Amino acid sequence: MYAIREAVAAFRRAPILTALSAGMVGLALYVVGLFSLATYNLQIALAAIEERVEIVVYIRDNTRQSEIDLFLTEIMDFQEVSSTKLISKMDALERAQRDLPEFGQLFLDSEVNPLPQSIEIALHPGNRTPEAIAKVVKAAQGYTFVEDALYGEEWVDRLFALRRVGLATTTAAGAALAMVAALIIGAALRIAVFARREEIYVMRLVGARNGFIRSPFLLEGALAGLTGGILALGLTYGSYRGVSTYMLDVAWIPFSWVGIGLTAGLLFGTISSAVAIHRHLKKV
Amino acid sequence: MIKLTRVSKEYPHRGYALRDVSLRVNKGEFAFLTGHSGSGKSTTMRLIHMSDRPSSGEINVDGYSSDHITQRDLWKVRRLVGMVFQDFRLLPGRTALENVAFALEVTGTPRKAIPARANLLLAQVGFAPKKDALVEQLSGGERQRVAIARALANEPDILLADEPTGNLDDQATSEILDLFWDINAKGMAVLMATHDLELVGRHPNARIIELDQGRLVSDSNIMQAGTH
Image (tube, rainbow over all chains, first blue to last red; front, side):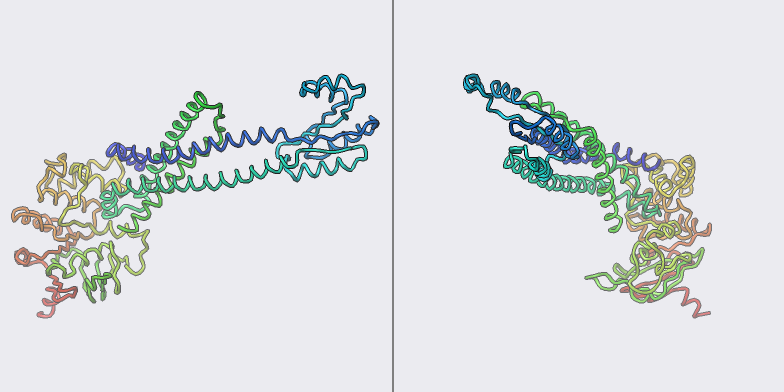
């Protein structure tokens, strides 16, 4: 109860300082929020590209339907495979005429359909990796009636290299930003502790327990962190709305990320405050 | 009650503030700790309050030894030892009553009991009428009374006063000394550091302990014991 009263009283006594602490926390976390927004949208973009990763197996002409059916059954046994789709010679021709109109007449003039039938194999999300793709391709190539199995090897390798670089960069930059935010929060709360050094001195003078001295500062730190987190959330949402309305369509970060951000603000505030008050109590 | 055994205190770059001091202050005693500036009076006070630790030797306050007490338990000593200073060290922006109430609150007095207890403490030091005045509006003597009321908040066994009259005029000094004697008459030991020998001379019943350059050079108790 004392801790709550003192934390509220501290705000009343020095509202500008408290607002400044929360503001600094808010701005530090806002940068983290913007970064999260960018990272999340980059992830969505990469996932959309990944969705297009599929294997196309070309079947030799005159392959028996029973052999194809067996292949479809066996390939579905791979845990990496999510679905298969048989494209008949006729379907292939229709698709070619639709997708490649400049060659439309050529297809019509031809008496024999030159396009082979094929099977499109889609993979589960998370299994669209070069290793998983190679495994399925190798298995498909083991069937004698399979003429070829293609998946755009070079393109997939590049995509995954880009993903690895993206992940490493976002992890490092995110950690650095979080650390900067923690340092800023720590500085803000050290100012708050310094502003109340006389009270701390009197508390120790008259025999207050250390836990009693610490508790309002911890609560104040937690409140500053949480308030800063909410402020950062508001600023990030405002930026998201601005970008969505005037620049490009972006997605809002998931609710779980918001929760993690607010919890991080609360923890940063509490821990920074604990460090600041611990240092101060060691000095006086 | 308070026992210093061969206590020395050395500060980095400043050398020894106290050298090999042994003394004992008993329950209900009134003693002046005298000496020039830099003689070690304030260091002795800080060591008894355990705001600082000795470089060597031992301080014992009501059974709590400086050799064994942990950081976590220091509050126990500080509730046994009330302390006042020359510069009062009251919290600005708060009233006299709030300053005393603050000490009660942070040492765990039940919230409902605080107003009555703070008023009583201020009444004990003769300060009831101006209890709602901000400390900035009070005279030096008045501020010292508030500081004494705060020091008594935990009903300590001993009151340490470090040059408490240094900023006061003669009238206020005399009133504060009278107050210390009143407090002492109720059984509390008082140890007052002062460089004002003229003031000390006005209180022949008090014990006088003299420090010089960190050493104990005379103690009226020992001298009396020697003459008898």
